[in-house]
Amino acid sequence: MLLVALLSFNLVTHEKPRVLPLAEAALGVQPVSITAVRNPRSAGDAHDFSSEGDYWWPDPKNPDGPYVRRDGETNPHNFLGHRRLMLAFARDFGALAAAYDLTRDERFAAAAVEHLRVWFVDPATRMNPNLQYAQSIRGVATGRGIGIIDTVHLAEVALGVRALHGAKPLDDATEAAVKNWFRDYLRWLQTHPYGLDERKAENNHGTCWFLQAAAFALLVDAQATLADARRQFKEVLLPNQMATDGSFPRELARTKPYGYAIFNLDVMCALAVVLSTPEDDLLKFTLADGRGLIRGVEFLAPFLADKSKWSRPPDVLYWDEWPVRQPALLWGALAAQRDDWLELWQRLPADPVVEEVRRNFPVRFPTLWRP
Image (cartoon, rainbow, N blue to C red; front, side, top):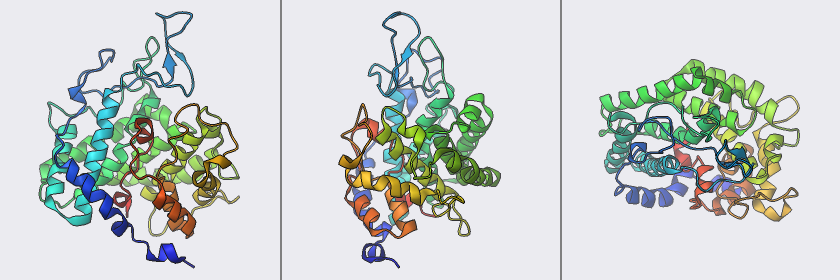
């Protein structure tokens, strides 16, 4: 039986007071794509997204040689320009698309469409639909498959494009061009060696690959990709990543186990939302031994409510900045009919300002994720 908080809860009513001021502020933001900032060390051109491996540093034994890895320790001298532009775009576009979806106010749609044109349509400013030069490592690689995680924020953008369908400012030509961009990027993810490798990752990287592929496929109506992703969720992602207690052992083995565990559960729940159908609710799906996303929330929720209960070492960085309003709590509450999870979600910070937290928080506007 649904309890009191869930009985009275309406996501649209709850979100409007937060979303509309964010969208009003975004109306005054000039769209800026990655072409505005160039990484001088990138092997790509001005239209290629560029980032550098987070945990790679100069080798003290060979300062001019290839970089070496220090897990969990972010090098502050890395190029961050394109990531920051992506985060700003996802935030502003998401607010505008969500506000239009909630109000049908064409002002929000018109501003959102301008962002789409700058990022995906205009030849002078559009981003190339690939991530060939992401998470490069000086002296080691000009790009890597794990860089695909840098565009996880585009999953919510794709859902925002769907929400704009039918808006007067989104003319047919622009909508077709935007969908073609996402279709091209999905094809790259499914055919380039970087994408093929990332798809096979048995941790948050694989989860993020599938979230993007599923969201893009939903936008462009790639039903075969969606069907494959549902199979992979049930037969590969969940059984290979989750332990019987609902934890993700590969995430817990990292030097930032708390943040990684939160991130992977959020993304896997988001993937379940995108892939679910009226006949097949993946939030409620369980393996024969009972493993499923509700068990995953059962494992993590006590530590989100009271971080002092965390029995593992604290994260080496950003320990104090988590948790925020983790979407796994919302979707878990609705699936499992848990008032306590919903109440926790409601009282956690909804709009984190710390850049690293924002980068690992790809669901800002949950109304865009409604069926």
